[in-house]
Length: 274
Image (cartoon, one colour):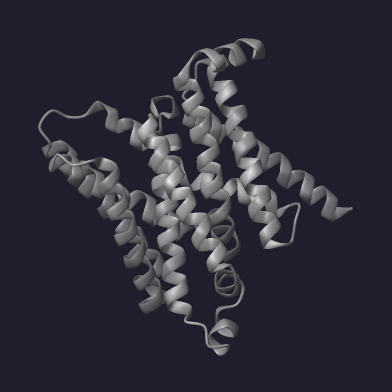
């Protein structure tokens, strides 16, 4: 059955684009997801991801590109979530939950108000990697270049803030600026992932490959590179399984990733116990 997949991969451009989209998404996930895991801001990333639907709904209502709306909403919600976290840390969970819920509700409202409901919007919620087009790949590649370039330029600053904010502040680092910049990069990564796994499943792909990589290396740089490779491998396997079983591509990639994460966690725990 594997042979059928490779024959189809060579024959069908849409399958080639799907595989390339999974690889491009893995690059962004590895670069940013590692900081999300180390910093333990998965819940914040979830708030950013789900608020994006509001921007997409408004963009559709105004007859604009929903991905442009997603990018604007993602950056706005990242700055809002970051401001909330810095200003009202004691109410952080409640306020981020509110941002999460209101963003989704705004999206649903404007989708309902949009004449001629766009059925393809469901792919933004749950992902449809097989519908990725050439334009989407160019957008993903551009976002990857931006993410990797910023991480490379600000690597030491991000590492300092991820591991010890107080020490970084004592050394004269503008911690708030770096923290908000990191959240903006998380927002861009969310937009990068929408086409592959959808808004609902973004957090899994953003964090799990990096969490798997963390089991096998203690260096953050090594973790980033390994997370990219793990993400690419799991995206390929998930796409292969989805092709064989005729399952939804994004959901299958997440299931495969989740299973590998569970097995890796058990293996890591067993090694630690020994």
